[in-house]
Amino acid sequence: MSAQHLENHPEWSGRLAFILASAGSAVGLGNIWKFPYIMGDNGGGAFVMIYLACLLIVATPILISEVMLGRRARSNPIIGMGKLADQAGVSRGWQVIGWMGVLTGFLILSFYSVVMGWALSYVEKAANGAFVGASSETVKGLFDGLVGNPGTLLFWHTVAMVMTVAVVARGVRGGLELATRIMMPLLIVILVLLFGYNIGTPGFAPAMEFMFAPDFSRVNAETFLVALGHAFFTLSLGMGAIMVYGSYMPRGTSIVRAGIWIIVLDTGIALLAGMVIFPIVFSNGMSPEQGAGLIFQTLPLALGQMEWGYWLAIVLFVLVSIAAWTSAISLVEPAVSYLWERFGIRRLHSAIAVGVATWSLGVLAALSFNLLGDLTLFGKNVFGLLEFTTANILLPAGGMLIALFAAWRMPRADSAEELGLAGWRYRLWWWLAAIVAPLGVALVFLNGLGLFG
Ligand code: PHE
Image (cartoon, rainbow, N blue to C red):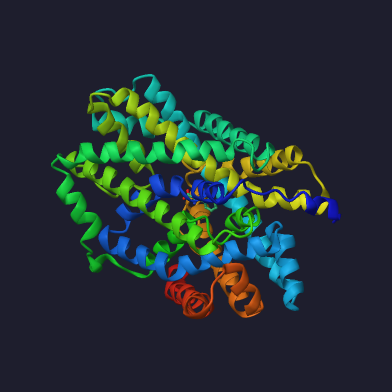
C-alpha cells in the first residue's frame, strides 16, 4: 500500500453533499419496491411498528457508529478497519467487517440490478403508453410477461449494471452529487402528488388502517427478522457503504445531525411510498400480498387512470430507476476503493471487474423467475435466497460487529472526539451501541433460528 494512494482519498464538497449522497444510497428500491411488498406480506401495521422500533433503537446508533468509523479511518472499510484496530491495539481480525461488507455488497447488487432492470423496462413500457387505461389484468399480464422472459430480463439487468459501473468508474464527486441533488426533491414531489390523488379514493381509509392499525396476531419470529433486516437494508447499513461514504466526509461536520437527516429522509419516503401504493391496492380490490411484483402492478394501474398519467408514469419510473441507481453505486464503492488503495488498480478497471462478477451472479437471480424457478432451498429460489440472507442475516451481523467495535474496542476519547459528543449525549450513544443494539440483533437472531430448522 503506497502512501500516495491514501493521500488521494477523495472528499465530498461539504455536509450537504454527504447527506445527499448517503440519502441517495439509502433511498432506493428498498423504500419504494421492497418496503411496501414486505409490509404487504407481513400483515401491515404490526410490521411497520416493529420496523420503526428497530430503526430507532438498533439502526440509528449503528448508523452513527458506521459513519464515525469511516471518517476516523479515512480509508475503505477493509484497510480502514485494519488501521482502527492498530490504533486501538486490538486484533486485525476486525477487518472481517470490511471483507464481509464487500461480499455482502456483491450479493446484494446481483439481485438489486435485476430489479433496477425491471424499473428501467417500465420506463420503456410507460413511454409506449402501455399503462394508459389498463385494467388490473393487463398490468398483471405485463409484469408476468416481463419476469417470464429470460432474454428481456437479462437485457435490462445488463443495462442496469453498465449504468452502475459507468458512474463508479467516474469517481466520487463527478455527477453523483448533482444527480442526488435533483433526484431527491423530485421524487418527493411526485410521491406527494400521487398521495394527494389517493386521498379521495375509496381505498384510502382501509390502506391507512392496514398500515397503521397493528394486528399482532400476524407477528411471528420471521416478522421480527424481516423488520430488523429491512431497517439495515433500507439504510444501506452494515456492509461498508455508509462507512466508505463517511470516509469522504469533511471533518468538522456533525455526524449525528447528518445521520438523523438520512434516517428522516429515508423513513419519510418509505412511509409515503406505502401511503401511495396501498390505497391503490384496496381501491382496486387487489391483495396486498403480491410479493415482489407489488409496485409494478399497482402503480401502472393507478397512473393509467389519471389525467396526466402517461407523463407521470414515465417520470415516476425514471425516478425509481435513479433511486435504484444511486443506491447501486454505493454497493460497488467499498470494493472499488479497496482495490485502488490496496493495489492501485484504476477505478475503470476495478469497477468493470466487480461489475462483471456481480452481473454473472445476477443472471442466476434473473433466471430464478423463469428457467431456474425449480432451483430452491428452504423454499426460496436464488433471488429469494440472496434477498433473504443478505438483508436479514449478513447486514445485521455486520452492523452488530460495527457497533461492538465502535463501543468496546475504539478508545472512548477517539469516538467522543469524532462524534463531537460529550456528557449524557455521548453516554446515550455508547449504551445504545455497546449493549442495546447488539443485544437487539442477537435476540432477533436467536428468535429466528427456528426458521432454518
Ligand atoms: N438502501 C438501499 C435501498 O433501500 C439498498 C442498499 C443496501 C444500498 C445496502 C447499499 C447498501 O434500496
